[in-house]
Amino acid sequence: MVRYVVFFLCFQTSSLVASEIVKHQSPSARATAIEKWAAVAEVCRNLHNFNSVLEITSAFMSSSIYRLKKTWEKVSKQVSGQLYSTSHAIIVTPKTSARSVF
Image 1 (cartoon, rainbow, N blue to C red):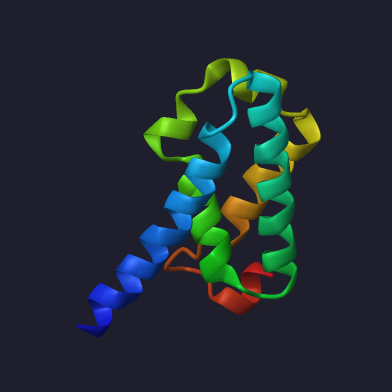
Image 2 (cartoon, rainbow, N blue to C red):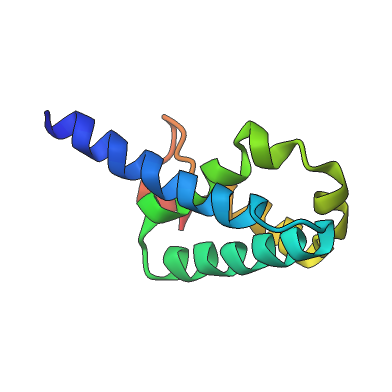
């Protein structure tokens, strides 16, 4: 039961992020929403709230957001690079520990 509740809460956050992005009509408004959520992910990373970072980045990787090519073209290169580094900084391989990544 506990695993189901944790999964549901994680799914709920990712769905919120995705719906907040998709509700905008224009690609530039969607790009602005992506940039704002990327800033939230960066704040969460600085606060060591890695679960929220994973939830936000998983929303960006969902098919409804990932396929928005015109929107991603309007996202600034700085934010795109920040998203890449944030999402890859929290991935821990078997050879590293969480402390050595940060």
